[in-house]
Length: 409
Image 1 (cartoon, one colour):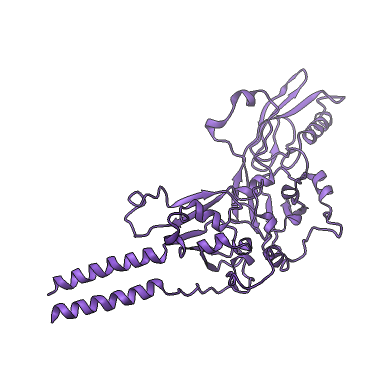
Image 2 (cartoon, helix red, strand yellow; image 1 turned 60 degrees about the vertical axis):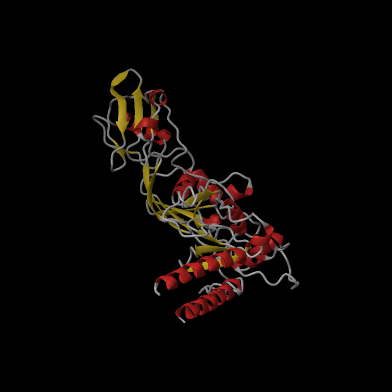
């Protein structure tokens, strides 16, 4: 009797699990309005049945309809005063800890290397300090010439030069529509990367203190960023810059930063498909957290997964990453019901979103792009095997349950 009851239990349990494995699974519930296409990306919405006729390639338009007007754009698509701002801020700007080489012809008194002090001044012997932070070397030359004449060292303007020997790193703060807003240091060179020959040659230059480098160092701009009105706050003054050119194949306004600068990137409160491309201000890539194991494992090595995080280029879509994580392929018969799940977060609200796609169905849809979301930094991917694999798993579990029941006799 015991054996009969155990066998009945095993059969019933097997039927129950098999039905569960083959039956439909409810779509993930989400707080954001994913189903209507009004979540962060319209591409998050579930695909309709393939036999239901709907307009195709409309996701980008759906996203754009929610956009607020660009703050810095004019009616003709230009920018408001960005060109004038670029002129005001152009050139190499000095900051604290920059190393300068100052030379006055036929006068060793003032010749030497000088570091701009913490309070932004150059302090030469016998002269009043000269303000240097945020200014150019030409500005310093003019002020030094006036100081030498005013203090009676020269009757006429002497020949002199001020050149940068080495640029220091600067501390700036970045906020707004970027992936990792925080205060950062950019432009600092490590000791083993300093080229002493170039440093000794005088006339140093750097691109590492540009605004674009600062934006990239905080994870890059988000797809909802308004690049027409990036704001630089320096010494209490606000400058508005148009940086759309980095995505439009034309020259973009980029300025050199100094310590204490603050950068604010406004948001258009919508997803902009055209910003999902590599650029000087985009994220350097997307690190994906992934799981594609049929069975849980004690580590990645036993399951033939080299790392639990994988890097993909910025602009990669969900289905591209599914292929990259080895979730696609194999026998057609066992692949038909395989699915993949994307776990992401709305970067504007911080609310999580879970998206599930049937892989083989997505690969064969003509309108696949409308339902294939772009990946964002920090996204996670999980892959689920087909119903055939699930049935095999049920058989394994039933066998284990039956063995356990026999041991309890």
